[in-house]
Structures are given as C-alpha cells and as structure tokens.
Length: 229
Ligand code: ADP
Ligand code: MG
Image 1 (tube, rainbow, N blue to C red):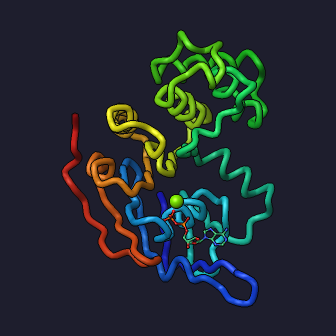
Image 2 (cartoon, protein in one colour):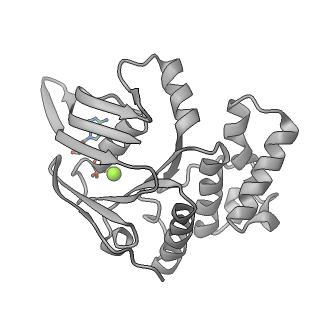
C-alpha cells in the first residue's frame, strides 16, 4: 500500500540546511500496524508528514496505493489526503467551538457530502469510539482520552485506507494511552492499516512492527508479537 525508496529531506535554515531524512526505505502492506520509534528530533514527524502529503520529499520515491506522490498541485494533494488518509495528532486538533459530532462531521463536509449523510456517518463513528452520549459536548467538556477518541472518530469518518497518528498518546496518562492503543488495535484487527509515531517503548510494543529511526536513518525494522492488554 505504501512504498518509499531512498527518501531524502532537508530543511533550509538561512544559508545552511539540515539533512533530516537520509535515505529512508519503507514498505508497508495493507493491514499492518507499524510504530515509528526514535528520540526527539530523529525525523519521525518529518517522515509522517511526507507520508501524509503534508510536506514534500526532496529526492527518492513515494507511492501510495500505486499512485506516485510527486510534484502534486495543492488541490491534488488535498484530494489524495481526503481520499486515502486519516490523521490523529498529540494535541487532538479539535475545533473548540464545535461539538463532538460537528468535529467528526467536518471532513465529510469537505468531501461535499449532504448534511443528513454527514450527521449519520459522524454519529456512527462516534458510537464506534464509545462516545454517542457525548455528541453535543464541546471539546473542553471532554477528558483527554475522550478528545482523542473524537479525533480518531473524525479521522475514520472519511474511511481512509491509512491512519497516521503522530504521538497520539503523548498528552495522555498511561492508563488512557493504553486504552487508546487498545482501540487502535481493534481497528487494525478490522483491517485498518495504521502508522503510529511514538517515542514510548510500551506504545511501540502494542504495534506489530517497529521501525527505529536515528538521526534520519532507519536503524532497525522488525516485526514483533504485539502486546495485548
Ligand atoms: P521528531 O518528530 O522525531 O521529534 P522532527 O521530524 O519533528 O523530529 O524533526 C527532525 C529535525 O528537523 C529536528 O532537528 C527539527 O528541529 C527539524 N525540523 C522539523 N521541522 C522543521 C521545519 N519545518 N523547518 C526547519 N527544521 C525543521
Ligand atoms: Mg515529532
């Protein structure tokens, strides 16, 4: 589903430049659940942002679902993002003045779906994350774990083929982190392909494969027996 070959990425910093990703090779098949591990600054988010078509690579090849991701117009990039990808972030990124249901429905609005259809689908996905009773609540009335569930429901609403999560448990206590990971495991059991960036060992052990980044290079890439709670 995802193939990256010899990917390089640098950031320009005035006159100098910072070489962040130095020849990444990564292939991910449908149904995998992969942890991208590494210490802060190792290039995890940069890699995930390129995979998410939020940022561009400098050189190398990236194909997603057999489509080459290269020199896309902003419009095409947005189309592919909407069609293939769901995003979950550490800081939830919910819209504060919209309730849980409206937050989940938002990507469907951008897909041009009708109001009734949006509401129904959003409710279905809120139910799936166990929050149907919280649909009219605003983000600031929800706990961290509940906010992340809403964010996951929003990411799933558009039925993406690939779910990308950047430190999804980074702002949560460890019990809530494990709950969120259990839920992601359940989604993966149902067939969803998931990539999770984390710097936490226990979180990575709940995935099926660990890719370890160090200074922009993959140091290790191994399948593991997934920890289940
Ligand atoms: P991680 O997610 O593993 O902590 P990042 O991918 O965010 O690492 O960052 C890798 C390196 O690239 C860091 O040194 C960071 O400061 C730098 N970096 C990230 N984004 C940018 C940017 N937009 N401009 C310049 N430097 C950046
Ligand atoms: Mg990061």
